[in-house]
Length: 193
Image 1: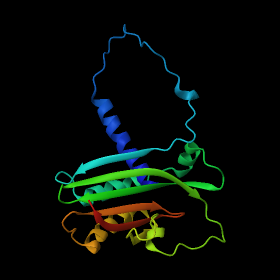
Image 2: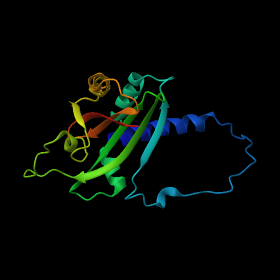
Image 3: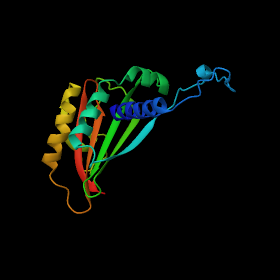
Image 4: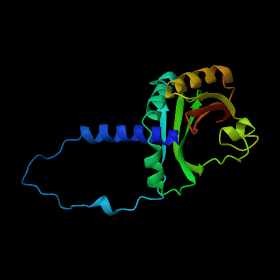
């Protein structure tokens, strides 16, 4: 869920930068041909997914992790849940994946808005790292850190890169940030590119 918010914010910044760099005809005699009223659009049930490929020759993993961390601070889960039209027993979260391909010198940033049932007092506790990271048993996820402050996310990703070690031939580092009731969980694994 946080990944989605981060990607949403990054996309918004890119859009605003692009939009603000355009020159408009300031001739007041030119009238708009359309007057759109978007207030009546029903956005409930809308989920947003964002993907961005980042050149590691221009940005370091540390820069990317810090940007991700800053975006996490701005996520409004209540508004996301309202927009998604979630029932009372559901909660919204941002799942953020960061796939680092050192051979191609790219990092693919994927943020996806997700929902899950709110935990009940009698729910079973997630047992494996794969489950804790939102995966299936056997996916190879490792919990790198549980962050109760967004400030630790960048450190957890960088420490995780060291912990996971240098990717082998045809391997990539895959990081995932999963929203918790309080804070986020940072996970990592090596996968085939």
